[in-house]
Image (cartoon, rainbow, N blue to C red; front, side, top):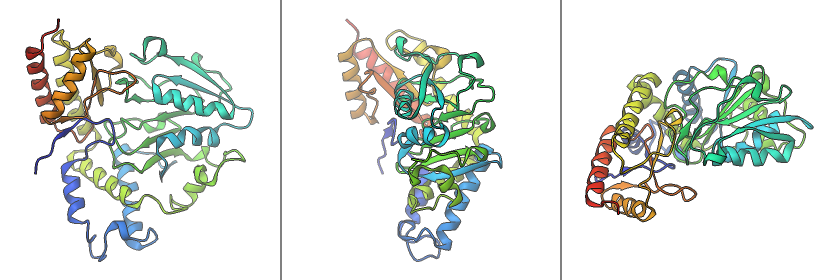
Length: 362
């Protein structure tokens, strides 16, 4: 078996033990006589899978009892519309912190439904930091405040949880969920596409405080109504069964390592390894301000677009795949999610050293 080091921002690599477990159960799950992909979502076997997935996610994230966990479809981008449809009343207001491309898209989508404004942004500095806010940054009569907690494209992460007072705080955590402990009670809603840290593409997790259910606008499509999904235990229609099963295996894997406290130690060590090298020399430059650096997505450039292109090409040939930065920003991006082993980061650093030595700048 010749597996490469996949630094893709998503879909990303999955833990090898999870893939091996899934492979061993692919044709026949337990004593069911069939694959999980063939099961009725109403069968006892599958009901146990989705129930255990929720139990393990609640345990991992220490989700309070007054929050519902929803296993949905449509990606985080569908939640860009679902959030205002469920939380923004007709004639209501919502405030958005725009710190990257996805929070910008969420803001643009929400504008269709009411008085939606940008409370803070770092767009003028090419999103190289997360803007700081205080309680006074937000309108007192806003129905909610929305943030993207980790910005995949730009390699930034909120170093703080915004103080919104009594205003519900909504967070897109697609690229950092279950990478470290987070106080769920500080948020009214957390949503995340699964294809970065949790599972293959196709699953979206929504964690929503119960008192916010039942507020959807009249025009809300049934499939986007959180209360409908909560009332039906995420089974109003057929859920993404196999993806939820893989998520369950990922949750089990993290719990076996020691939970999110241990996961954070592992992830911090990997990120420090790469950032410390970048900061120790001047061939590669990290554009993100240190206080806003992401632990999951590390961006860097050489300052020469042609060298950047050559780096990505040679890295790919050497087994370090998907290091090319997003087309909107260029450069390089190493996404080192939970499943990336430390060895992969260490070997990348060695490759970076060799590349710098063999490709001097003009």
